[in-house]
Amino acid sequence: MNTIDLRSDTVTLPTPAMMNAMMNAPLGDDVFGEDPTVRALEEYCADLFGKEAALFCSSGTQTNQIAIGCHTQPGGEVICHEESHIYKYEGGGIALNSGASVKLLRGNNGRIKPELISGAINNPLDVHLPLTQLVSIEDTANRGGGAIYAPKDIQAIKSICEENGLPLHLDGARVFNALTETQMEPKTYGRFYDSISLCLSKGLGAPIGSVLVGSSPFIAKARRKRKVLGGGMRQAGIIAAAGLFALKNNIERLKEDHENAQCLTLVLKDLTWVESILPVETNIIVVSIKAPARRDEIIESLRKEGLLCIAFGPGMIRFVMHLNIDRPMVEQACRILKKIQ
Image 1 (cartoon, rainbow, N blue to C red):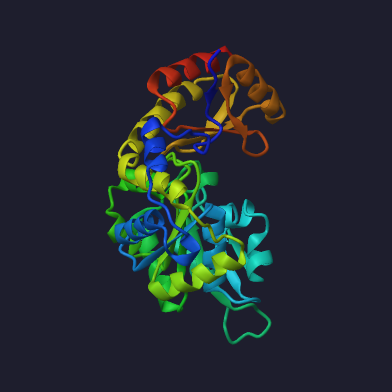
Image 2: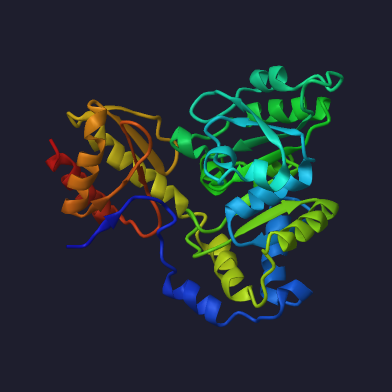
């Protein structure tokens, strides 16, 4: 029985073409700034989003945490959504690495409305309150079922940040999924943000890596923080080559993942045990079931039939499409789902 793995878009394996690019990448010592493939990746990402410089790191958590550390000082405060990855899934890194607190906001499917941010900025003259030092948003919003920010809302958030002298950071773990749907040019999109974390190992299919982009002074500071966190890598071009290949070859095909997600959703919404599904905008499907206590039972029943998914909260299950899933596999997943009563 072939297993259909829909737990995450991080489970992908490199294609033969990607492996070939990795094996043939020119290498050097990146801590000395001598790895030509790493430099090529960083230059490509910076240019793609209209920024001055970029930094290759091992993970999206690392790029996010470095960015937060560069934008804030100990005792400051970060505004973010209560379900955001930087708060919920990065091991308390904001407190540990930056000594900052967080102001958690609720919103619509993982997204923050601009007006909420205006009311969350602390009065800098009130010594009882931490200084608000950063706003961070996530596009697409993982906990929101892959929800996309409307460009007008990002512009409104950016304007609020500018009016208050605050930097705006993007956790862009799946930003290319968002851009695939909005059709906004990366350079245009990049103007909204002071820093962007770009993950290469999710929908793009690279085995490892994330890139942080921003201004030259910001990235110089980020490079130092990466070193302090033990993130300096040597002949890193062998993994950077996978990211460069992914950026050049795997963005356009993201639309297939979105279409496959819609196909699976059509079946899920008619199942007797499904209560509701968050709006499916990209490659993530988040299902709430009618009997929350059955969540683990349903996940195990699906596993036994060859379909993998994960728990995503009380009474919630997540399915994620990716480049290792083709339409016949989606159709088989649909048949498996229909077996569960």
